[in-house]
Amino acid sequence: MITIRPATVRDYCYIAANLRASDREEIFCQLPDDVDARAVGQLSYEGSVPEWRFAAWYRKRPAAAFGFQWLNAVTLLAWAWGNRDFNRCAPRIGRHILGLKDEAAARGVRRIEARALSTHHRAAGWMCKLGAVPVAELKNHGRNGESFTLFEWLL
Image 1: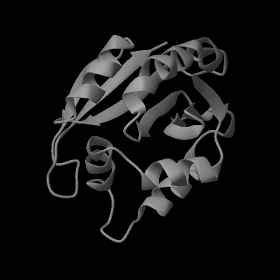
Image 2 (image 1 turned 120 degrees about the vertical axis):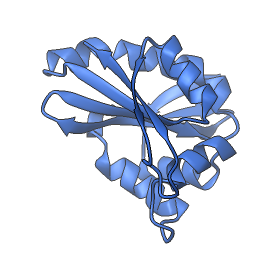
Image 3 (image 1 turned 90 degrees about the vertical axis):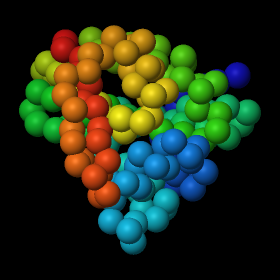
Image 4 (image 1 turned 60 degrees about the horizontal axis):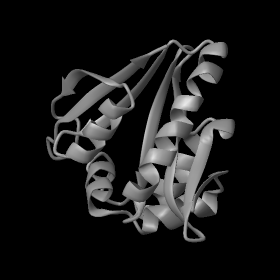
């Protein structure tokens, strides 16, 4: 059974230390070389809106981290990453995220953005299934020139 819980920093650090390869590649190509998994978990936790940071649990362990960060007064950045069980959790995470759109709109949010490494096809497909629209290619967004795709939901 998959459950969605308010996240703890420990959840995020555990998940970051056990990332699936595609998420590890996507995350770490955007960060300086000296950033480790613990820092990814800590920074993701601290940078997220407190009431919108979650962990999906599968088989009594945290399997996926997801949440929202403010980009400006009307725009949120959505993000999600996980371990090898992420795909099992993705449908439940997707329903949870979509269920938060009205709450976000009530708080003045008009736009939610997400970014995916251009080679991370599962992430792009999942966002499109959730109604996100690809709006731009972000060339040279990664440390080694990796391209990303910018997705948006308009509320």
